[in-house]
Image 1 (cartoon, rainbow, N blue to C red):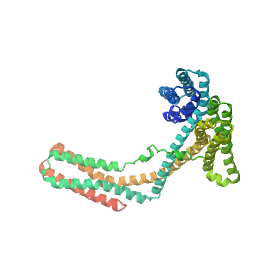
Image 2: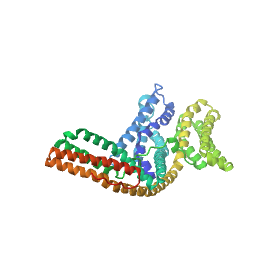
Image 3: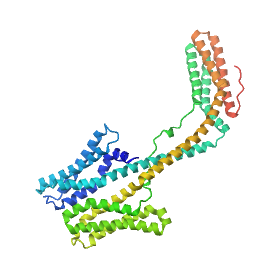
Image 4: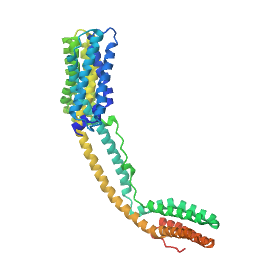
Length: 461
């Protein structure tokens, strides 16, 4: 999957991403509107909901219309959708603040804040979700191919005699009940066989003949055509951990890009400095813990790298929250208390997103190659087994052609001739007796073919 396929694919305008962004964007709106003198405390929440609905209408609604023309949206169009949504979000927020609270709308500043957050976060979120979904499909397909290959290999050890026995047994089990029912029906009604009954008997034997031919036709495995299931999201995130200092830098930058401007505007310079210190400290923990583990316990880190990185992210969030509440840089503890929820969510999302984004593309490429190799290997082994099966199928068809299919075809021809020319009742009874002998001989031939790997001896009738 290329960057264009990831960013221009269905996830670029997917409603799940829009829903997932509601909580963090709403917390950012609530943080910003703390300084806005709304007459009622619930107005900031109303502003957050209205802004989010407008974003959904632009990104999802316009995106759905655009997909009627483009199977893969151009990157310029995707960027235009999200940036337009950011600008409109700022305009809606400013208009509500001006109309309800009577303050300056600050359209440009609000829109610029949302544009920065959009540029930093949306591409990496969309790219990560697309790669995760791709990995789930690849893992599901890989597991399906492995299961098919295991079943295939369990059949690959069959000898020609075993395959022949299996095919002949299947033919016998399918045809013998129909033959027995047909013979029983003829024995009970042979004295009252008229032209109509003869025609019906001809049709039933013809169907039995065709069914014998169908049983020997090659079959395909429907499992090969079924859509493979997706693997779990947890398995999709089972990827190698990225370089710890790169991860730390990206997490810190993404977090500061959305929180720092609003913290500075609402709470002032000291609160902004506290946000910087807390975010940088969190980044240091995210980078330092895996780096130390990799350097001094390399074998342990290779086996438990994901767990160590996840633990580092959790510790980083706790350190950031502690510093926001206890560093003393900003003497007003309430300010830190209001910022901590957004800071924790931002750090969490950044850790998860960037851990996946950095390595998923390479891991998916490797998995795609492994899947191709597995399918090629399965095709080679399946072809060898299919050749053996086809030889035995053809040999069984040759065995059935004379004593079974030949007899059935002869019965059909004779009954059709009798029904068309209207022979006497006595001749009809003789014909029915002959058909009965042929059907009993067919049943014996089927038993003989299933019991021994040799052509049955034809019997007259």
